[in-house]
Structures are given as structure tokens and as C-alpha cells.
Amino acid sequence: MDRRSRQPDDAFAGEARSAVSPRAARALWWASAGVVLAVIGTSVLVAGMDHGRRLPVAVTLVLVQACALRWQVRAPVVVLAANAVTGLVVWALLPAVSLTGALLAAQVVLCMLSATGPRRLSVPALAAMCLPAPLAFGAGGGSGLTVYLLAVVLAWTAGQWRRAQQARTRAEMRRAVVEERARIAREVHDVVAHTLSVMVIQAGAADDVFTERPDQARQALRAIETGARSALGELRLLLSAFRLEAEEDGPGEQREPGPSLARLDELADTLRATGMAVHMHRDSATDSLPAAVDLAAYRIVQEALTNTLRHAAGADEVSVHVTAEGACVKITVIDNGNTSLGSSPVVGAGRGLVGMKERARLVGGSLHAGALPGGGFEVAARLPVERTS
Image 1 (tube, rainbow, N blue to C red):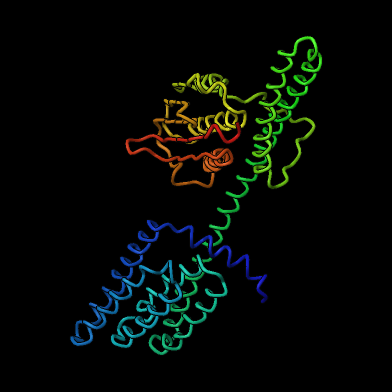
Image 2 (cartoon, helix red, strand yellow; image 1 turned 180 degrees about the horizontal axis):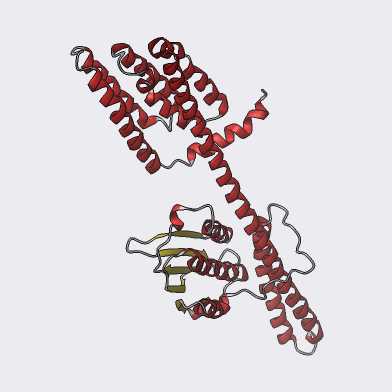
């Protein structure tokens, strides 16, 4: 296999391993170590009651296995080898402990390696874990061999299933981002086209009055300069958003006219028609935002309200605050419902979160969303005003 054919697999492995946060890694350690101590520890204590000298050594090795699981995400191959060796030693000290049970910690690491590592590592690891199969056959016959091989293969297969699930998750996230960028590009195109049309009109007006009324001509020229600066900023946003080709609109497709923060009351009325109480607050200082920021802010509020309506179970009240703070626009949308949005960032409302974060990122801002300690869900975004002005 050449290097190029291994690149996608290695790249995915890097993404999968980096996707495990430190908090998740700690939780995984506690869970896996608890299982190992409960299963192997109990077996060792029971089997070692008649082996007074061997029991302390076996217990120590079990504790070493549990502690080694702390690094199963960072160095799964090393931890797998260490737990396999210590597991074989435990089985040699206490043959009454089944080989499958003694190597349980190694099977846990094999599952992790299969889920996050490239197949060029997990497949040899699977083969290596099958090497003690003759020992299982010698100790337990055909049934012992079957149980051991099934346990090892199932551990590797479970990791592969998790790997495929993560791949689908990332594909869905990438597709959501691409769709949102295409939508942004179409909308920014309309904004830039409108700005350039106004510039053409202003240039014609300046030419008409250039001789008779030079002051009015200079005013038109200043308006052209302002419009040109704004259009350049919008074009930069368009080029950064439109990295991939988007499908062209069909001949019958109609676009929503003029999305803007000025239309937030219309959004609120739509939500109120469903019986939900909507509290809307918007500073007058947000009336003259750059078109790209205005559009991004409107779409973020729109998507947040849509997610509240669709995914916030039991929500009957939502508040929206759009305020200007220095060189930024702050957007806060809070509902009083019960939602699993924060724990399911892939399907359903999760794609809405991806779209909102992409909107904020493309204008140089940031967005955070999550459940509140006292109940409810909050979407908070900060969008800089100066980037596209």
C-alpha cells in the first residue's frame, strides 16, 4: 500500500483522536478502569484466595492495568501491549482466571485503537491479540477458544462501528457547513449587487450636476467611496464563504426578500402565532450595520428561534436581545425549554448550530450555545462591526 492510499485513513485517525476532549478522556478512563477493576479484580480475589503469595502480585498487576488505561487515548498501542503482557502474567499466576477475563483491559484498549487509530495499526493489533488463542484452547478447550476469539473480534468490531459513526458525523457536519456557505454566498452576492447598483446611480447623478452644483457632486462621490469600501468588504466575505461551488438556483426558486435585523419583529410575530411568548429587544444603534453583519445577525436569530420552536421541549417563552457593545454586536437568545441540543450536535437542531457558528465565523465573530444550569438553552454571539465596513 502506497503512502497516498494511507493518507485518508491517517487523517481520519488524527481527527478522531483530537475529537476526544480531555474531559471525555477522563470519563472514559474512569468508566473503563471501573469495569476492569470490577471484573478482573473480583475474579483475581476469588481465584487467589488459595494462593496467598501470588494474590498480592496479581492484584498489583490489575491496578497497573487500570492505571495504564489513563493513557489509552494518547498512546493506545503502548497501553495495549502493556495490558496484554500484564494480563498474561495475571493468568499465569492464577490459571483459574479465564484468559478472556485476564486480557479484558487489553480488549478495551483494542476497541479504542480500532475506533481512533488507522487500520494499519488496529488490524495488526487484532492479529496480535489473537496470538494467545492456543493458550485459551489449552485451558478451556473449544469453548474457551471460541469465547476468547469472539471477545477479541467483538472489541475490534465495536471500535470499527464507532469509527464509522464518527465518519458519518463529520460528513454531516461538513455538508451542513458547505450548504450554509453556499447560502451565505448567494445572499452576499445580492447585497454586493445592490451596493454596486447604488454606486452606478450615484456616479450618474454626480456627472449630471458636476458643473452646476459641485457640492452635490462631491456628496455623491463620497457616497460612492463609502459604497465601494462596503462592497469590497462584502466581496471579501463572499470569496471566503464561497470556497466550494454551490448549486445554482432553479428557475422557479424564490429567495426571501431583504433579510435584516429590521425584520426581527416579523420573526417574533411568526413565533407568537404558535402560542409562544417572544420578548424582543434591539438597540437602535444596530440600524446602520454593514450589510454582511446585519445579514449574519438576522440569520443567527432566525435559526435560534427555529431551533427553539422545533427542539426545545416544553418551551413557551423566549427572549431575544440584540445590542451594540463598542465595535461588536451582541446577540443573545434564551428559551425556557428542556433541550438535548448541547448533547446532540449532529442531527436535527445540531445542523442549525453548525450554520450559526459558520455565519459568525465568516464575519470574524464567535458563537456559543449550550444548556443553562437553571434550565433552558442559550445562544450567544458576538459579531465585529469593523471587519466589513
